[in-house]
Image (cartoon, rainbow, N blue to C red; front, side):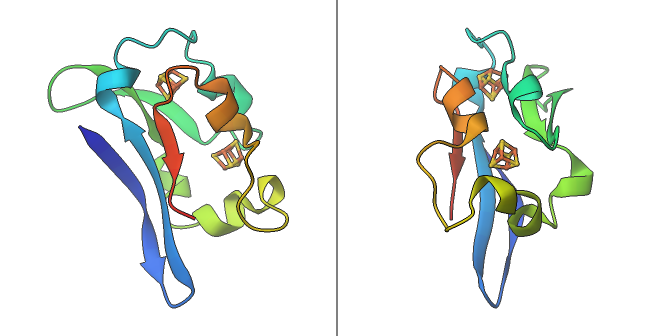
Length: 94
Ligand code: SF4
Ligand code: SF4
């Protein structure tokens, strides 16, 4: 399943998606938790009783602002969260 966290406004779509099928068997030691300088990820138990990463509720309405330091000129190929997630479970919509 793809879990999407974020929002849409007049300037665009801002979603971080997590592929829970990849995330549940994380081979990266939950590296996203430490990699994000804003500590935006946490582990939660989903509706299927699987432990997977998610974006913290406090960050879900402010992603464009929260991620701005990692994306000084728009989309970056070297986002810390994406690079740390070796299973490739994290994607950004913008
Ligand atoms: S998002 Fe990636 S690094 Fe984080 S727990 Fe899931 S698979 Fe592991
Ligand atoms: S882009 Fe940066 S601030 Fe945004 S979730 Fe990834 S590591 Fe965290």
